[in-house]
Image 1 (cartoon, one colour):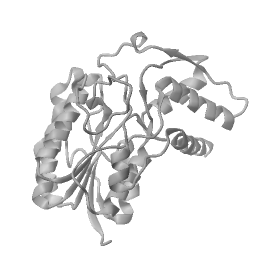
Image 2: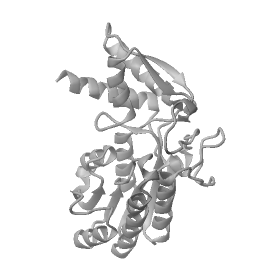
Image 3: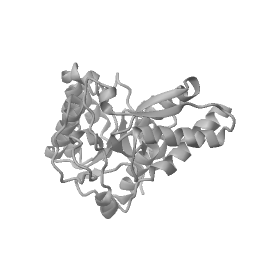
Image 4: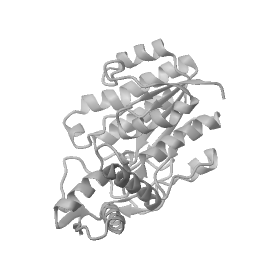
Length: 295
């Protein structure tokens, strides 16, 4: 494969940071700072893309403050929708391919079956609605694209549920965690490796693909499994007990979907890629965290 020019947005985030490392083997990775390419200012994104002329654009940048989006809808839409449309338009003009990360929050979380790509979307809040608008803008742009919907993203660095739980488990005797929201944790590195796999695949049938960890659990189940695995690594360390609570006992400004399960069969059929089982990826992430702590 000839060296490529790849642009990664959101390079300081969980997925973006992994992308910069994973994609370096394919050529020049352009990872703009916010000052260089501000997704809150779509005109900034347009100018940067015209100046750099990438062949692949991997858009991991997003407004992800789910609750704050309720009071900042204009900012959420600028980043999650308007700039995505601009990226698509400029990619179409350049002949570039766009890989764009989206979310399970485009659904309302009703029902018990994992969502497939053709299921009806019905976001519950501003964040999900802005991400859905971004999907639509990209699809209408004319660019070759893959929209990768994912859920419950975490990794060994950055701010995420797992790192918060591990910190609190060492400080408290009990942790009250929601147990009636169902989904699958997704390792940020697995999402970056998926992007690399698609780039190697070369041919991208434009559309939406579900890309979440396989298996399923709840937030309480995720916390319990993380604590169980850490307890096996660190015998004798006292860790908190998880107390399962309903969503109603933990009110938030934005509603969360009760069902975040995503069916990954289309991804497997099209690209020959299956996302990692969430318990397997969790073991890898905890090993990394333990190794970093031991340094």
